[in-house]
Structures are given as structure tokens and as C-alpha cells.
Length: 477
Image (cartoon, rainbow, N blue to C red; front, side, top):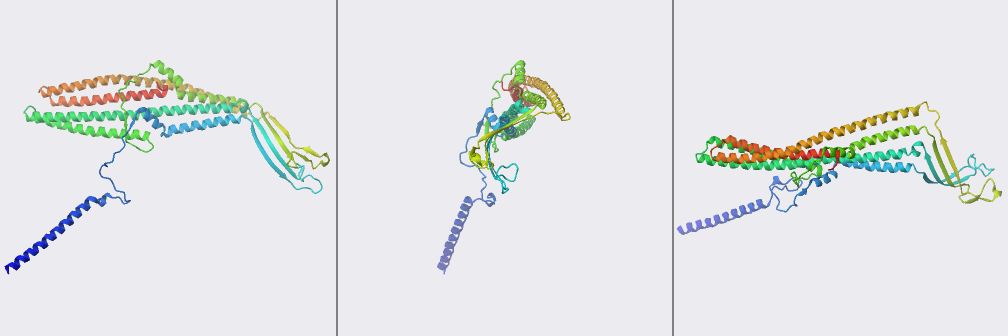
């Protein structure tokens, strides 16, 4: 009996072992399936899996962009600049068309004129038809010469319009250069400020460690540790803000450079490279000779002068000449028998005729004189606009030059202040470690160093922007 009980328990034990083995295998299989199958929440409805971790595949390195590269990229994508370039191309075609309008036109004409006969004569029923069938094959040479044509007013006006369009392209290009330069160095300065914030964060962390160590050694009160903790927290927030500013500057520049938004690029930091400022006399000369705004205003005056010339030319006569060479006969042939004179035999059909007309204005109730007065008023207005543009260019030149001069001086001054602030922080930190200065002095020195470095970066950025604004008037120097 006892032996049977033992065998029964052993049987149950084997069954339990088998069950535990099956359960274990099921758990392992379930875990393996969980490892190879993405959770439902990570698979979008369109079947594409959302990548939650960084891919192990090697990506292409970011694009390195200089200021020159940035300007070239912006010219390929800026709508205003491309629109100005397109207007120049249109103006060029207008000039070609205006030139061609002064030249005679040559055309070829083929006609057949069929009319009903009268039944008794070989002529048609219409007076203008000398036969039932009339064939015309003409080469037409025509020249219309109103006053604007033989005075070349239209061609000169189109040339002025093309030159004005080219000047507007230069205006757009200089404005784009100033704008992209501002965005470019805004990113460079933001990167420097972020680096400064990171350095200030490291300094505040070191100071926090120093105060904590001195407190444990009985050399500093707990209030110093609290002040260092406050400073460290503030520097963390400043670092986050600097990072946000840097990313915004990167986005602003990326919008100007790429047809499809791309942030995977780095800019070359050349804020420290020297850029001299010419003398005021040199910039004045360049502004008066190389300024596209003045060329646009001058083009407006030239066009107004042509308007006066055209209005005066309207009092002159107009001439029109047309020469036709070919055939107009009852048979499509070089020689044929004239239906009205069959006894004459075959006669030549090929020949020419010339039409010339001269139109002289006599009386129009003063309309032409009124148009001349209008043109003279526009001429006076264009002259006033040109002189105002000259004054405005000089005023902007002096303002931009003063801005550049002040920014250049601020660069040198802010650099010296930043060097002094760095030395001041070093000395005050040593004094604090020696117990000769307070926590507030260290914190103030750290904040002063951060502010002075940011001011130095802002001064260099301001100087570059001032130079770019000045070059919108003078061109590259």
C-alpha cells in the first residue's frame, strides 16, 4: 500500500515537472516575440514604423557653409532677387523688339480672287477684277516711319528700361547680401553665446563644488552653497535660452538658403577675421558712382527726357513706304495672255509697284501741345526725384558710415573689457578660496564675464552688419 502511494506521488511530480517545462517554454517564446515585434502604438496606420531610437546607419556629414556659399545659395532661392532677374530678361527682349521695330518688314503673300463672270466679257462682275480668276503672289517690303521711329525714341526708351532693370537687380542683390549677412552672423554670434553659456555653466558648477567642499571643511557657511546653487540653476536656464536662440537663428538662415528646409549644416566662424573700413571720402566716391538707386533715378530722368522728345516729335510728319514685287494676273504664271487683250499675246506678269504716303499734322485742337506740357511736367518731377535720391544716398551713407565706425570702436573696447572680466574672475576666485572675498563677488564676476563676452560677440556681429549695410550704397570694398 505504501509503495503504491509513493508511485502515485512520483507520477504527479513528473506531470508537474512537465507542466512547469511547458509554461517556461511558453513564457520564453512570448518574451522572444515581444522582442521582435514592435508595439502597436509604434506602428502608424499607413504601415510605416516610427523610429524611436537613433539609427546605426552612418549619415552624411553636415554641409560646411561660408558666407560666400550662403550668398550663392540665397540667390538661387530668393523670390525677390529672382523676380528682378526675370524682369531684366524681359527688358532685354523688349529692347530687341524695339530695335527691330525701326527696321523694315519683309513678308510674302499668296492670294486667289475668284469672282463671277458676266457671261459676255472675260472680266468679272466686280469692277476691281479684270478677270474671273486673279492670282496674287507678292513679296512685300514695308517701312513705317512715324517720328518716334526715325528719332529712335522707342529703342532708346527700351535701352533705358533695360539699364534700369539691371540696376534693380543690383539693388535686390545688395539688399539680399545685407539680409543674409545679418542672418549668417546672427547664427555665428548665437553659437558663440551658447558656448559662453556652457562655459559659464561649467564655472558655476565648479564654484558650487568649491563652496560645498569648503562648507564641509568648515571654511564657508551654508549660505554660500545656497548662493552657488542659485547661480548654477540660473546658468542652466541661460544655457537653455542660448540653445533656443541658436536653433532659431539656424532656422532663419536655413529658410533663406535651401529650397527644402534643411538644418544639417554648419557655418564657418570668421568673426575674428579683419575687415577694414575705407575712408569717408572713398565711400562717398563709390556711393556716387556705383549706387544703383541713383542709376534708377537717373534712368527715370532719361526716360522723362525721351518723353519730351517724343512729344515734340509728334509735330513732325510721318512717312510710310511699301514696295510690292510679284504677280497679279489672271493666270498663275510669269507670262500669260491678258483676257481683255488676247491679241497682244503673252505678256509679262512679274513686276512691282510702290506706295508712299506722307502725313503732316495740321490741327488737333491743341492735343499735341497738351501732351508736350504733360511730358515737361514729368521731366521736372523726375529731376526733383533724382536730386532727392542723391541727397538720400548721401544721408544714408553718412549714417551707415557712422554706425560702422562706432561698431568698429565697440569691437576693440568690448574685447578689452572681456579680457579684464576674465582676469577679474580668476583673481576673485583665488581670493574666495583664500577667504578674502565673498560669494556675491564671485557670482558678480561670473555674470560680468558672461555679459562682456556676449557684448564682444554682439559688437563684432554689429560691425559686420554695418559693413553690409554700407556696401548696399557703395558696392563691395
